Length: 88
Image 1 (tube, rainbow, N blue to C red):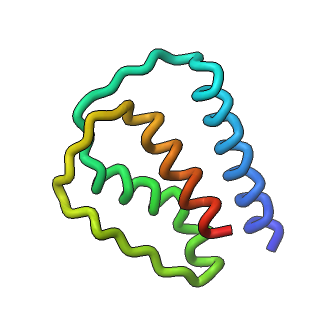
Image 2 (tube, rainbow, N blue to C red):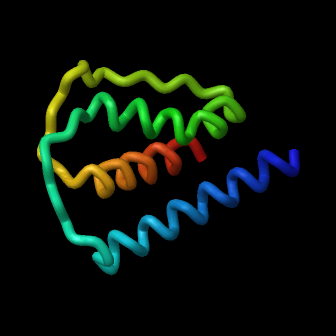
């Protein structure tokens, strides 16, 4: 229980740090062609602990490959934030 609570706090801290990075643009915006399906899989992996804890099943209807033009770090952060909030 302690490990799960600590993990959740760490995830929230990571989200806050990432939000601050985006908010204050400490890194340059560098969009490229990105495979959205791969980013979603990566985000699912990051959130897998919370997904399992809450006994939630996530399904994506994004087919591989599904290319978008975006900044990969920002896109991952946005998707992670949206899914993290949805899981909560």
